[in-house]
Length: 273
Length: 283
Image 1 (cartoon, chains in turn cyan, orange):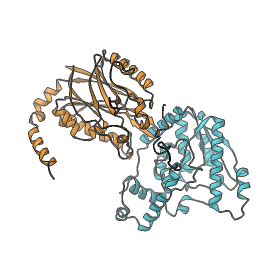
Image 2 (cartoon, one colour; image 1 turned 90 degrees about the horizontal axis):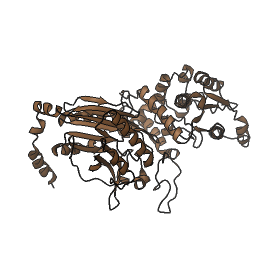
Image 3 (tube, rainbow over the protein chains, first blue to last red; image 1 turned 120 degrees about the vertical axis):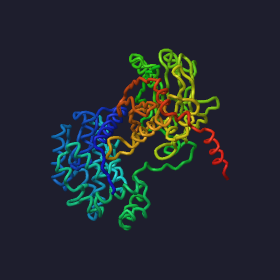
Image 4 (spheres, rainbow over the protein chains, first blue to last red; image 1 turned 60 degrees about the vertical axis):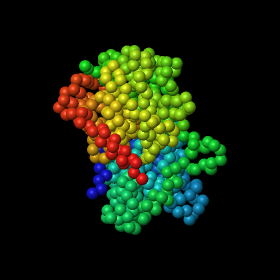
């Protein structure tokens, strides 16, 4: 029996404290979040609103012309319920000139351009609002590399990156996030009809259990087979975890000197605070 | 005889010894107000925990000339203190250390003997390993100090027990981890389980305090506890927030418990030594 149940009260307390502590000691009192209308950014938004006060949180709605109207509406549900500040900036005019240069552009390229355009707006608005950008990537997508490097992963701090998607769902219920956001199929909404689970080829329910064994419990692939997982599924997931390690790291610096950033120049971000 | 034991679970500024010293003095004042005889601070309470390359720059020596310790030694005229710091020896080795200060003097310094260097821990990379485990006499009886990973191993508390410690002072900077469906993190449950076990098995007082706050993504969970010689918990600080917990230790309980349960009297140290000699001389 693989049980990913978390005590949401403990998680809630720690994550709220994390945002408060890490935003404050970086010298800020405010936060900016790309509120996609999905579950993960909704969680980060509530946690930030609770930690810093809703008036100190700016939620950005950043639609593209093909975005689902649900995404905008669901983000608005959050803004209304949690009384955070908000701004809506359509990214179509930023994105279209680039994607129109190539009539054969793939969905992946378009999706990456949108994710990175949103990152640009997010960081630009941090300057306007004087807030830190809060991350919205969960543990499942970080491990699977199901993210855009320097796009949706870009942030100053990430409160939810150690929660699997199914655990994030548990927390979202405890945070009173509106039901339509919790119940809908997870999607990056980068093209019409896209859903995470279709694109990945498996469900979060399945893959979270497997990742929990492989990563948290240090099971070997063979032990995962014995625990009832299909070999092909294990191979696919394990390959993704390995292949996308680069997305989880700062780019390696070629070492030449006796003291090199990343190898032997070692300080926390919280150095001196 | 009674001992009013104060356990400080504080947040610290990473690498800012001056600020942390000020917080120590604030807690000393509070503890005095609550009639504490002894106040114990967590591991690396003067420096913060994930020091990495800061280790050398925050080191101090527990002497009256030291700009930090002179204040703490002065404060120790009012109540005894245990503080956590980075100790630099004369040959520039850096230790994770705890000092027991009393009446303006340093009664004992413990250098952490087990430096976790696995998982999220990297202490062995930056610090020297302590190489002694000694109990020491105080005005309240004989005590022993251990630091975090030291008491994850069974032998250091056991050695302190045989060396005469009746009061065990454990200090930690324990990063919270192991979230599951339980009300407490796995790390908290583990520490509470073993400290209770040591108090029970050694029929001694076991107090532990742990820091709070965050360092990057790590958090520290607090939750100071005191267990009496019957293994009963007599004080418990809150989780995740700064607090001063003061517990009254009725030191006569040692006599009552050991009259009922003579585990110390019956401990067969010669047998332990004989078997250890045999085990260690194999090969």
